[in-house]
Image (cartoon, rainbow, N blue to C red; front, side):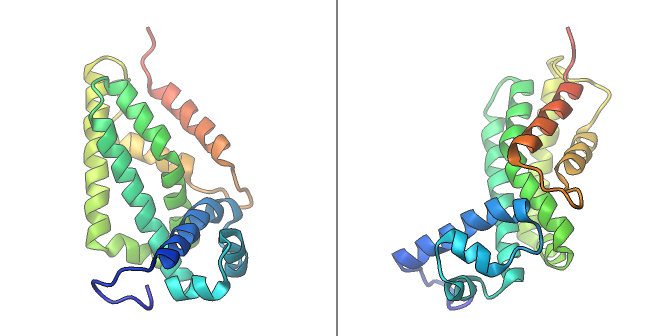
Length: 194
């Protein structure tokens, strides 16, 4: 971020602006696609365009910040899911709760490949991705051991299905409700039947 050095904290109003910009970007970028004007995003966040550029410098830095925020949120959902004792409930809750953030990741990786390469190269993001995959693997195994999930799939299958379901389709901007429906259909296909 521009205007901040190590160890500096943001003023209360600057922090509020930062949070408004991030929340708006995480909500609107997947809906409006890669060509959303920064001016429109600033207006929706109820900040000036200058504030947006002061906080992030430009679209690339905003995209990187959004990706980091989405991964952080997915990691939090994963950690919360591990506390659940019912494997299927933990897995399905994690996937449904993380779907909005994973949708952001899918959109950003598709629409902003240069920024995405930087994010993927970051050690912090590599660590988060490894942690998320490890939790997902444990949840899949737990659900299978409890007989609640098909045993002919593995964590890589689940991750690939999620990536496919959550990746944007050119010319179409799905709503979060539609995305949750697709994820629910995917989960139904993974569950064992009595």
